[in-house]
Image (cartoon, rainbow, N blue to C red; front, side, top):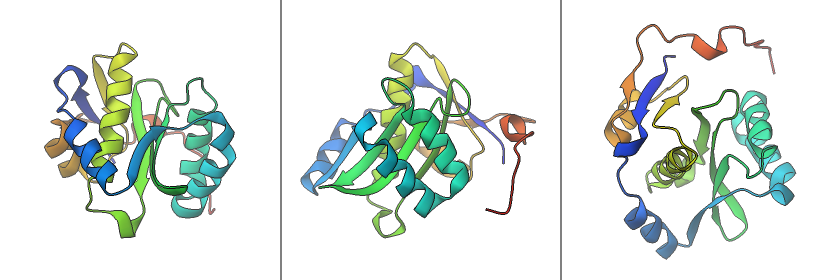
Length: 159
């Protein structure tokens, strides 16, 4: 899967989306250390060991480079950045039953805004699946010859 490049100084606002989700009882928040094991285990259960490894890395930073979507105390989705490499967005996932509500878009934008606030001008969305989503949502463009990219030496196993 190829990588995509996004101009972080040209991001759309996410304020209205965050407010709409809040009216539905959904909050997008930066993860904090006391929730690390719960979040990483949730990611492992719903997205697998590889994503859990990256999430664990993002949770080991201060502040964490992981955002979560929650309804009350229930995790609905997550997104990370600077997990496997600096200036990379991902992994990310939203529970299937919660998709289509804008949660993934909100998580993406919160991470990209955080990356911009940390001084990045461009961000890399690593190993994208739904390229059309990123093109439409943040104007991301495919990076030619970027596959397998960062994950070329990835020790993929059977777990």
